[in-house]
Structures are given as C-alpha cells and as structure tokens.
Image 1 (cartoon, rainbow, N blue to C red):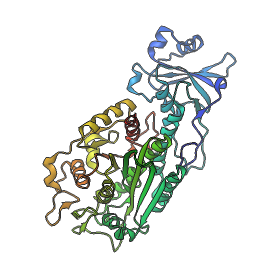
Image 2 (cartoon, rainbow, N blue to C red):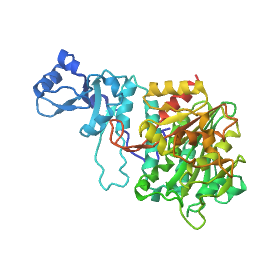
Image 3 (cartoon, helix red, strand yellow):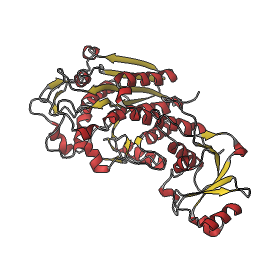
Length: 463
C-alpha cells in the first residue's frame, strides 16, 4: 500500500534503470585529481567548472544530445546533507540516476525527494519535472514514507484557510485515519462542553465553523503508548486582541502543529511500528464575533485549573491545555505536543531551529541524537522553574499571557506543563512550520519540522 497523500502528485522517482541519464556528483577535489568519468572530466575542464556547492553543468554527447550532468557538492558536502534537493529544481525534465556521489544513498535520494516538492494546486500551468532512480542500496520504502509525512505537513499548511478551515482539516484527518484503518472520533460544537473540553469550545465558539476535537487511535493495546497532540488553529485573527494586518498574513499556518503530528502519525502507521498510537488535535478558528471570548474572562479547564484570559491572541495554549489533559489521562509512555505557539521561540532560535522542552533528561538526549542522525534540527530550551511565578494570575490559577514579554517560549511551555502529570515522558515542540526562503530541500512555504527526528527516535526506541 502506498503512503497516504492529501494532494495526489506523481512520484519524484523513476524505475527505468539503464535508460536514465547519469549525474556525477563531485567535489572540487574530484575535478582536480581527475577521479571521474573521462568524458565528464574533459567537458568540466573545458567549461571551467569548479564543482561549487549546488552548481550544475549539463554534459552533451558527441552528437550534441544531452548525455548527463555534473553536480557540484562544494568542498565539504557534509555541511549540506540534502544538497541533492537542488537537482530536483535544476535538472531538465527527464529520468536521471546518480552515477557517482560521496554521499550515503539514503541522504542522496531523500534530499532529491524533499527538494522535488511543489505546491501548485492553484497554478493553471504545471511544469514537467525531473525524476531520479533510487539507488539500489537505499531504503526506498522508508524514503517514500518520510517524504509522504513531510509532504502532508507542507500541503496542509500551504493550503489557504478558505480550503483548510476546521471542516476541511477534519476531512484530511479522516482521510489519513481511513487510509491506515485507524479508529477516529470527533467531538464538535457544544458537545465539547458536555464532554468537558471548555477551553477548546471557548476559543472556537465565535467562528462560523464549529470548534472540535479530533482523535485517532491505531495499533495494539499492550504496545508502547505514544500520544501526539497538535495545535489546530486554522486561522488566528488574534480574537478581540486583534493582530495587525501584517501579522495575519501567515496565520493559515497556525494549524502547523496539527499538520506536523499528522505527518508524523503517517510515518508511524505506514512503517507499522509496534506502538499504541493516539493522535489528538483540537481544531478551532480564532475568530471575532459577538460571542468571542474576552480579555479578563476566567474559564475552568478540563483539568480543573482556572485560566484568566489576559490576551485573546494567546489562544493556542488554551486549546492545548484541554487536549494535553485529555491525553495525559491515559498515562502514555511518550507524550509529544507540537504547536506554532510563540513568537518568542522565533526570536530566540529563528525560523529553522525549533525549540523543544522536556524535564526528562534521557528523552532530551535521545531526541538530540535523533536530530543529529537525521539532520532534522531541534534545540532544547529549559523549563526554568524560576519563571513559574509569571504564569500565576491574580484572580485565577493561571494566566494565558504573562506580563512583561520576557521568556515567552518558556512561560508558554511552563503553562502547558501544568496540564501534564501522568505521562512517563513529555516533550513540547514550539515550531514555526514555515520556511522563509528556498533551500535545497525545500522550495519555501509550509514546512515539516522535527517529525523526521521524532520518527527516528520512536522507531529506534522499539528496537
């Protein structure tokens, strides 16, 4: 069974074997020492080709036809492990294979696949693309499932809110569940109050699309309990504390946490890992209407803690609070939440390095190792207890928006920590979910962050 696709697209890979054109991936040293194909070397020298990182030189045949290509890796290929992603954009349409490359087969093929992504759903014209043969010593099935998970996250985030509101996100979630024969349940609208999810209801009640809680279950009881929680704010106006126009431009990505845990769940289910998987996604649109929640309101959470609303634009932690409390009730061995939560995390680490928070030192070590092994960057930030005082409210147990603006990513994480007490291990990922500019492995736009590292950690932890 092929991995789930939200948007069906042709594979970036081919299976044509000998009928494909060769690519010689080289460093400057290969040119200098002449350790490549003689015809390619001769053409490179005549063209003054230096094998700079990401450079491409097409090679003609003696008859003047396209015969292959040289691709530059620069002097230190390890600095850009997915540099082959640039080939997906630079190569002419056709079928290719890597003839030589000082890269691991999995990195080579995964890099090309990641770079092949295009979000052209709304384009009238779609251009033909190059395809690559997966090397025989690469794990083709694993590469394809990782790409499917990444592409799912990218597709969901890139889709504008008029086509990715709460109804449509539920439909995508349902499609994922059905593809892998997972159980799915939905709690919608006022049922949230009846089943004790007051904060999810509070944040989403002003929208024309009802708030809801999505839940997926897959795997076997008795296996390791892994629970994923993702923030699903399909659009965030800021509520009554409305955002300025410039700050709303990317708010379609505020469901990036949901998109990423769905991508991770896809990888886990597609690999048939021996886990008892649970995925929980609270879905809302933070809209403005006569019944929108207000600054100064106080609400009781599912856990019983009361929350004072000091800013309606700090809504993500509210819906996560109910979802995390619900997830925690079953005492999972591993509880992961992902959310596009704070601007403070971006100020601290930028858009490409998502921070994570955990009080489990062993988990932090293992996640860091997984990040390095997969070249999927993450960085641990502290759950500094000295800032606990900042999340206390004058008239309630907690405030959703501490005053002062300092350490915003940490105080948000400390807020969420108050709703997790039974899980054996918990980690919170404050992701951006967006690539600001084109990179070899990404054309820019919606982005999967940390899920390849998390998949590696969960998979290796079962061995």
